[in-house]
Amino acid sequence: AVSGQSQGVSSKLTASFGLMHAVAAYGYFDGQLQLGAGLRILGFTFGGSDNSGPLAAGLGYTAGFIVKPKRRQFRAGMAIEQPINAKVRGEEGEPPVTVHVPWTASLGFAYQFGGRLLNPVFVAASDRARQRAAGREPTKAELKKAEQELFEEYQQQQTWYLLLSTELALTQGGGDSTLGNYLITKEPLVSPRVGVETEVIPRWLRLRVGSYLELAATEQGHARLHGTGGLDVKLFRWDVFGLIHPFDYWELSLAGDGAKSYLNTSVSIGFWH
Image (cartoon, rainbow, N blue to C red):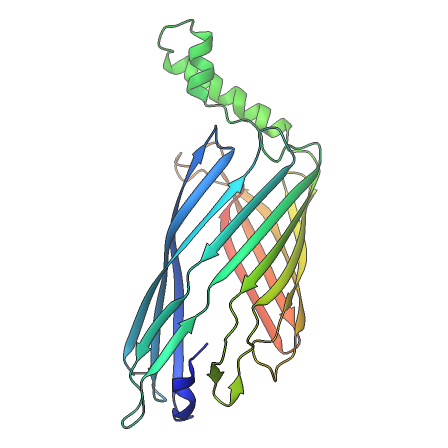
């Protein structure tokens, strides 16, 4: 959102911005509690038709946690993001423009149906090999054997599952701020979200669908319901000269987000895991 100072800015101005997150996390109690924190970085340009105006930058903070009890089928988490304010001068004779990125908070919960564990116990190959070595340092062959056993056990667990994810997102309202000739909604925006994921063909094809409600940011606007979907397909096998063995299959991912007068799609290549 842009503050009320921007109301007199020329309509010929164009704007572009980017919001980046840099976050680190650490696990406690064998990974059952994950705590994370980091930076929320805003880069913003406000210029003429060639978008060559000055650059504004702002900095905020973000923090959150995830709880995932071992051998259980649920996870819960929460995250908060601090608001960001950045100023950039307007055109000649115009007042400065304040760019405001609102604070956000979200609460999420996930539950997985089926035989596959959502929160399995983490076991390192080195730990298993040392247990079998009866106090001595395990050999490379023993470490390799333990690693292969763990991988085979992991593969056996890749049965059918149905993952249900929910989130309640809260975004700061605008108070008495305006966006052009529109009054920004004063009350915080509450957006419910839900998603479902499953592997239709275990180890080969993963599908997901979901929906969320986008509330109007201005008092003159209207809410709209979004539908989302995506899929992951396992492709050919290549371990990049041994660098990613044994998770050495590539995957193609497609995703889409659609609503009235809105469509966003993405294509990516990654690793199947």
